[in-house]
Amino acid sequence: MARSNKPIVWGLFAAGGTASAFVAPALIFVLGLAVPFGLFSPSDLAYDRVYSVVSHPLGRFVLFGYITVCLWHAAHRTRTTVHDLGIRNDRATLRVSYSAAGLGTVLAGAFLTLI
Amino acid sequence: MSNRPYVRPMGTTWWVSKAHYIRYMIRELTCLFVGLQALVLLIGLYRLSQGREAFDEFLATLWGPAGQMMSALILLMLVIHSASWFNLTPKAMPLWIGDKKVPGWMITGAHYGGWAVVSAVIVCLVGGRW
Image (cartoon, rainbow over the protein chains, first blue to last red):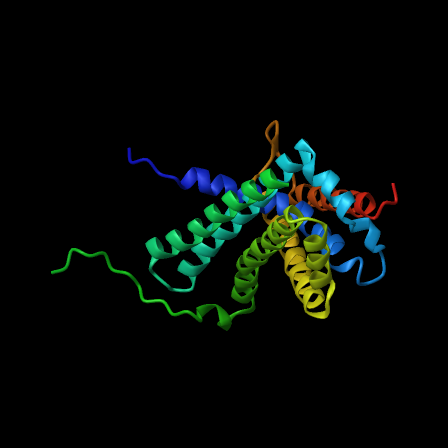
């Protein structure tokens, strides 16, 4: 039987869809809106506070996993949606979207290592 | 005679004809905003790795007028993503207890409950109310 990368990518798609469904709205709210709307104080997102969470081994691990599955969710669903839009160039779409997700995964790992 | 399989021609705009299809397309396009949210986190990590000043600049940009508009749009699409994802969960993962099928609304409801709890925990943790 021909080997396929489909189960792996689909697994990442499903994991990213589920993780982001639970976490993403609250995350973007606390990060992007709570302070300008006056609900949080800027000190809630102060450098030292964020740094201590992100530099913790568990924080690094969770963030890396979360960003990775989110990127692959986006990449896979973009690919199928491009197909749904009647654009039949799956190989090119696959290459672009999965490369972007791969690059993002590597960058997430690099930034989290540097921090 | 041709060996190539017949591919039915399909336009790019077939989905605008029906409300159901439009909802489907919006649901699929939420993935771009899941990706955008990850990109915001990625940029945040990059700026954090550059030090205090860079991170403060990142937050100032994110909290500026354009950043707020972007965050609000991302939030809207992410809420649509969460709701549609949980609404589909009973179809993607039907659950059986013995030979009885667990009703879809219970699976969806449990996920909405979990979503509320997780969101409250994140808000309380970051907001420093705990």
